[in-house]
Amino acid sequence: MAMPNTITRDFVNKSAGKVGSLTLTFPDGPVSFKITDATGKEYATDEARDATVAHLLHYASQSLQDAYSGCVQAAAKSGRTAKVEAVESFADKATKWLEGTVGVRGGGGIDAVTRLAMQQLAEFLTATEGEFTDADNEVREEYAALDEDKQKAYLLELAQGQLEDADFRKACEDEVETRRKEAEAKKARAAKIKVSLGGLKPKK
Image (cartoon, rainbow, N blue to C red):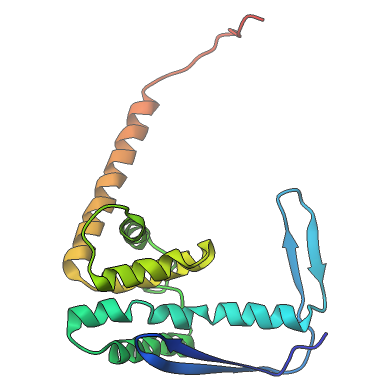
């Protein structure tokens, strides 16, 4: 089936109001896809249904929503309004879409420092004990309401923002380096253990 020509989505935050909108326009023509599961079974078509295409494009645009998901928390730190923070973050992500740098940092994938930051944030957002501000709890609630895939995108956005803090980035970089050295030391110790079965095998 041919794709619908236009999909429009508005982006609204309960604290910031309307943040922006997206209109995707594309030519007529079929869309194909192939999915292969762990058993090797394929789910493929040369003409995806309109509803499937619309769903995929709608989900892809989730990154624009994730961009301003922490606007309340950011406003609490900056002293600005949630609206200003949300619109600014939305504009930054829109620029990345335009420049073709969406989803990457410094021209690459998710690096070790960003992955560590995401891990730390995930622990904070799911912690059952601790002291949390109202802004913290709003972000924690938003995170808890997402499915697993959307949580990953949410964490990535939060991590990239948090890593703008020089102290936080330095702490993450130091921890990554410490873990790298520990892994190398462990590998070196393991290399000293020589195994030679010499024809030995377990008794039946």
